Length: 283
Length: 272
Image (cartoon, rainbow over all chains, first blue to last red; front, side, top):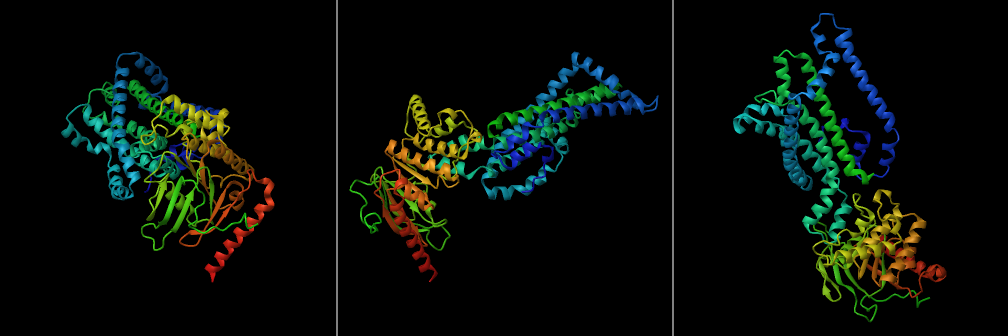
């Protein structure tokens, strides 16, 4: 099956873990350059900030419209907004939608992935259909989703789950295929029932892959969320962006953009931490 | 040396006791294959006896072990354990494979305990399971490492853990499928001695699948040589020497030559 997921966003250690779930030497590759990498990463973020500032404050013409989006106003505004009543509410609404969407995606994606990974015929039967479905932008379902689920959160849940389910299905299926046959022989030599094999061998065995799928899903959902919230809802970060635009509150708009990036960054870091926690013993 | 290198005919009973495991005229043929993998395999394992099934790679040793373990039903013939037909895996038959098959997300201790509480295993209290696990880990000398994860274990330690997982079941029969095949020479010798100790301490019978003649000579009471296609027993040797056997190299050497010439004879017949 062709895997065209953005796997290049994974760290080298994660990619290695994907390729060989229980390879031993991986442990030596994580620890060494961690501090250097962190320092370089912070440097890169600072460089980005400087570029932003150069673009809006130095290189722009004195009366340019772009000056409204300067970090010198956006960053203080973000702090003000975070301590105010509105933005935290919009953040919580958006995060709730992400969590519900991911929850549904896991609920459907993991069992489906287990089945597809277990049965080659099912894989062959579903693979082209999934490649087809996942190439449809979740946003294109919007009118249909609203007609079916009504106005409000439900169509957003649907679209987010629809966007998130594919990486979870494909990674879970890949995890099943990469289960070591020795583990399954072990289970049968201990007279494990199907349920015991599933619960004690297959599920823990694919957990790392499920979490990798979840991390990719978080990235997709976070990107899809904002445009979803620009359509027919009255809360959430996407709504708030349009609201600031309508109020001509440009520093607030830029502060919200910054907040979206920040939250996405934290969500991804959280997913990474979860992956490391779950696979720490595999080293 | 004929009293050592004794060819016994196939149907001669190896011991007077009731065999703990017995195979009668076992044949195995995988669906879709024109030729059987195993044919006419007769075998009886006496309580406490260690038997090596020796044969070259690909002869069907592992398939045979799967049949004896109840993991694979024979196409024809019967396998009985203590006189009762073996249908499926028996809780007191413990299998160890060449791959130690440790689960990387469980500690050594949890790996040894793995499966003790499965539905088809005999019911026992938690305290009893814990005692068994502790005893098994002590037996293989890994008490210090019991909280380590498999990724932190050497190959020898991993294989010891796999052996401890078998022992925690208080097995009547140990089935070992080239368990030391992937280990270095020194570790392998250690593991062979450990196997002798375990068999003695637990009074368990054992079947060892190996392609290493020396390993078979050092640990077994009896060696069955498998050969041909379909595989069957082409030679049998009983070795009544005390263990460990490092002091009996000369006697073992005689049997070794005999085994090799039997193997060569089969190979020549096949070539002709």
